[in-house]
Image (cartoon, rainbow, N blue to C red; front, side):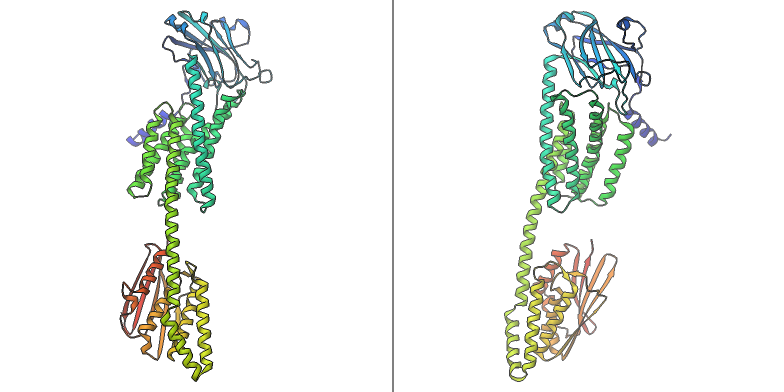
Amino acid sequence: MNQKQFIIFFLLYLLSPPIQGQISLVTSNLKEIRVTGTAIRGDTLHSNEIQKRDWSTVFDSEKYSKGNWLVRAEIVINDSIVIEKAVGLFVRYLPTAYKLYWDDVLLIDNGTLGANKETEIPGVVFKDVIIPPELLQQGNHSLVLRVSNHREYPHWRWYYGQVLIANYRDELRSHYELEKMIYLTGGVMLVAFILNLFLYFGRGFATEHLLLTILCFITLVDRVMLQLPLVIDVPTTYIPYGYGAFYFSCFMRSILFPSFIVYFFNLNYKKVLALSVLLINSIIVLGYTSFWNIIDVSTMLLLGECLVIAIYSLLKKKDGSIILLAGVIIAGLVYYTRVRYFGAGTVLAMVSTLAIAREFIRKEREERAEKLKSARLEIELLKKTINPHFIFNSLTSIIAWLRKDPENAIKLIEALSQEFRLVIQIYEHKLIPIEQELQLCRQHLNIMGYRYGKKYKLETRGIKGNELIPPMIFHTIVENGLTHDLHLKSKGIFLIVKSKRGTITRYSVQHNGECEKTELNRPSGVGMRYVKTRLEECYPNRWSIRSYKNKNCWKTIIEIIEN
């Protein structure tokens, strides 16, 4: 066995639940009272069974499972001052019927003992009683638990329960503190649940909001099931199902929260990362945990994975990574306080809600800025189209044509109205089909042809017609070619070619005009500024544009990288 295999084996051994050992049903948290030994034996429900001597101090989980049992604990009271305190017996999580004796005095009778499942009647989940002061004399005492267990549950055994000897007031205070913690964490989870449910349906069904919504809902159900036995008398048969819900809740939290962080930061290979978390946690939690260690194992998995993801996100300079990293560290520290996983879960829920709220505000600002930029671009587009100089020259041409050739004047007017109609159709859109853009370019060539009395032509290669591009970027390039170059020739040809190489789509626009420096090539030019702004709006940091002289033509290249 190599070092790596030994470490894995050792970790799995630590996570495996014990099968056989000493019984730990009865415990005491008072320094004056000690539990010195525990033993078990079968029970025939006869009254003299308690006095028999054939007790076993070795616990075999297979042998002592279904049936009637007696558990005896030897108690030593070291100091009679304990009489001045209200000492209580608290029985928790025994999923069956039982009787509890202190020095052969019956103190708790919960349910009805039976020799089989039909005659056995389970009691309620929580029972407690104050031990009479006269039974708390200094010296040796015995506590006997008489159990009737004829029901089998897949993940719960009757000996998972607890009989606790404790200060009555202190234990009740802990009970109320637990209730407050459940209400607090439940309230935080409810707020996070409503917020993420709203964001999921209101902001495009984002996966991160769905994951956190499911996590909060599962935690809320878990809190309700924890609270239920504290406020009403719930039958002991409820315990295995409550534990199953709790186990499932711990397991799902260890998967959902790390997956939420992966999707929240939009990390590369997020599906692979989320599936890896699911696989690793499923193997460890479902294969090597039990009632005794499920909280610790699932919480350590959750915090460890979240810590790694948060640090990685911080190194990648993801917005909000510092907040979540600080939250994970604080949650880890809180876990080792009295509030344990209640507190850690609350911290994580609050931090994730804060990060989401911050992200929500940031996106709102970005959307407002985007809308403002789009509005400015729309105005820029209209200004470009309804250019006073262009309209003045067009009207002058119309007047001239009306005097010498009314038929061509009408064609010019129709071409102008058609171009304006196309502009009205596209100016509000961020992306349009390239076919509409080509129609607009051809219409503009017709207008300029009428004005100059020349023939202009637009040819395309490799274009299907349904590709989406920002409006009027080709129109701007064509317009500049006409304005600065092709007016010197009697015939002008524009060629737009589309090609694809891997994830890069290239559009080249070329014409056979004179090699003048066009307005499009000047960095401060209106045309170049408009085209660049449109490309950045639609393809942030994923585009490039350049123009150059190529043999006998002027060429402009636009490259777009796909997501």
